[in-house]
Length: 184
Length: 423
Image 1 (cartoon, rainbow over the protein chains, first blue to last red):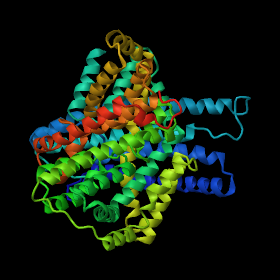
Image 2 (image 1 turned 45 degrees about the vertical axis):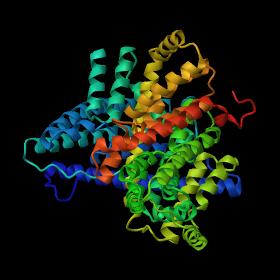
Image 3 (image 1 turned 90 degrees about the horizontal axis):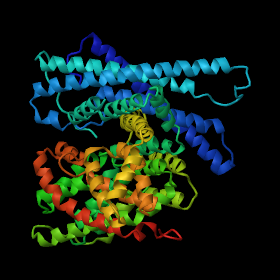
Image 4 (image 1 turned 180 degrees about the vertical axis):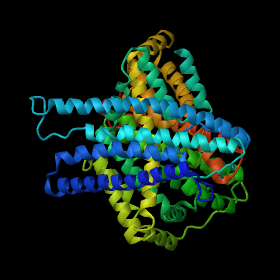
C-alpha cells in the first residue's frame, strides 16, 4: 500500500502486522545465514560442526517460507494468473479482487484451523511423552518451530480480509484504485 | 466434489493466488479419500525439512543483492567488450547477460526487471528493431534456467530423488545449446538488418570492464568448481555465494548500504521466497493426495495403452509440458507434475536426469508462451507495451528455442554424456 492511500484503523493494524513480519524476516534470514556460515567455516576449516545447527537452519526455512508468505499476502505479491483483471476496467477489476480475496480468506481460514489443531496435538504428544521412554533426550523437537504455521495463516487470513475490504472501497467508488506497481 | 474442483480451477483463472487454489485442491483430495486434513499441514512442514531446500532462500537473497547493486551494469559492460564485435554481438551480449542473471536468480522474473531496463535502450540505440529487442528480452528472462545455481534445477532434483550435482551436470550442455540457438538467431537478424552497428573489439576496453567486475566474475567459477568438484554441497555453495555477494556489494563496491538498503532487500527477497515456498508446501500436499487417489497409476495405464514408442512418448511429453509451462509457475509444476511423469518416463526408458533436462527446458519455453507465460506479463510491465505486441515479438524466439528443445529431447547423449552407461 502506498503512503498516499487513506488508511483507517484496520489498515493501521494491518500495516503494524506487516512491519512485524518484515522485522521477523530480517531476523530469521540473518540467523539462518549466520548459522549456515558458522557451519561452513567449522566444516571446511575444523572438520567439525553442530548437528543442531543444521536442524535449526532447516526450521528457519519453514519460518522464512511462512512469514514471507504472510508478507507476500500483505503486498499482494503471491503468484497468480492475473490476466483477467488486467482486461477489466478499474471498478470491475476491484469487484473481481474482492471475490478472489474472500475465496482466499476462506481457504486459508480452513488451513489456519487445521494447522492450529495440528500444533496443539503435537505439543500435547510431546508433553505426555516427557519423562517416558518415548522422549528422546537432546534431540530438537519440531513442534515449537511448527507453531509459526497457525500464526502465519492467521496473518494471511487477516491480510486477505483487509485487502477484500480495500478492494470493496475501490469497487463502490469510496477509494481510488492504487497505481499498479512494477516489481518482480 | 468435482464441482468444487472445477470451481477452484475457475477461480485460479481469474486471479486467486495459486497457493490457495493448490491448497484447496489438496484438501478436497484428502477429504475424498477420508484422510484427515492435518496430513496437508504435516506434508507442508515436511517439505521444508528437505536438506537441499535451504539453498533456495540463500540463492534468492544473493540474487536480489546483485539485482539491486551495480552488478547488471558491470556485467553488461564485460559482455559488450567481449562479444560486442561479433555480428549481432550486442544481442549476444544481452543473451549472455540474461542467462548469467537468471541462473543466479532462478527464473523469478527478476532478470527482465533488473536487466531489461538496462538492455532495451542499448539494443534500440544500436539499431536493433524494437520487436526483435522486446522478443529477445522477454525470452531472455528465463534463459539460463538450466545453469547452476538455478533454483528449479535444485527443486527438481529434490522432488525426483536424483543428485543435484548430477542434474546440474546433465543440464550444462543443453543449457549451452539453448543459449547458442538464441545467439545464432540474434546474429542472423543482425546481419540482415542494415541499421545494426558493430562495435570494434578493443582490448583496453575489455581489460577495463573485467577489472571493474573483478570481484563478481569469479563467482560462477567458484560455484561451478565447488559443486562439480565435490568440494561444496549445494547448501554450502549457497551460503558461500551469499557471503561473497555481501562482502563484494556492501564492502568492496559499496553499492548497497549495510544500514539503509540491506533490511529492505532482505524483506523484498523473503517475499519472493515466501511466495515460492508456500506454493511448494501445498503442492506437496496435492501431489500426495493424487498419489493416494491412484491418479499416477491411472495416467500410466492410459498412456501405456495409447502410446507404444519412446519417441511417441517424448513428443506427447513435450506438448504436455509446454501447456503446463504456460499455465503453472515452474515451482508448483515441478512438485505437482514430476511425480506424475516420473514413473511414465521410467516405463519408456527415459533416464530421470534426461527427463529433468527436458522438463526444465520445456518450462523455460513455457514461461514465454502466449497467452499467459509469466515473462510476457513482466515485459508488458517493464517495457510498457501491450500484451499482443509481446506475443508477436516472442514468437520467432519461441520457434528457435523449440528447435533447440527438439535437439535436447531426441539426443539424450547431450545430457547423459558424463554417465558410464548413458541410458
